[in-house]
Image (cartoon, rainbow, N blue to C red; front, side, top):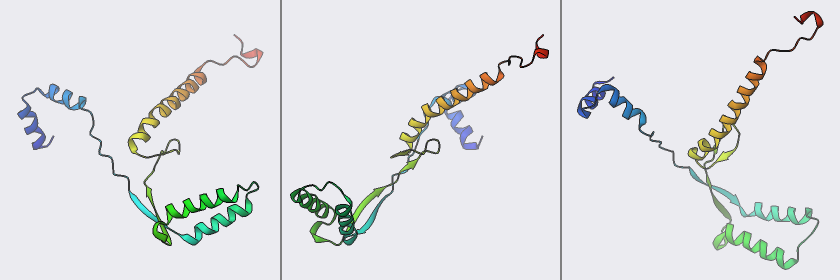
Amino acid sequence: MSEEEWAELEASGKTLSAFFRDVIRQPPTVSEPEPVKESVAYERHHVEERWQIYLRTTEQQPSPEVIEKAKDATFRLLFPDGENVAKVETKTQYICPFTGKRFGSMDALVRAAIPHLIKSAEADQRWKNASEQPRSPQYFDQIR
């Protein structure tokens, strides 16, 4: 232990085992990184092209009034004040190395990973137990 750690132990007035027991029982402090917020620029002409492609390739066309209302909402929300570039905020996603699922925080990832890993370990244990079972004889000369 470092000198600072010994000084902390002595200042606590506890025995060595009591001090370490309290340290072990303390919940870990988790500092989660803030999700990175970035803006992605998307030009107006790309949205116009997507609308044209959608209308050309969709078999059941809604009424012209519905199309116009939806297009108006698209451009009004993505390009306020008639701007030519939409700026859409994106956030960091945490991809679980065990399942490939995406989560909004590391805490959510770990909470979901724990039951998944327990089920996986249980399956491994069942497989191991099954493989350790004695096998029945395959030939008459193996029977005793």
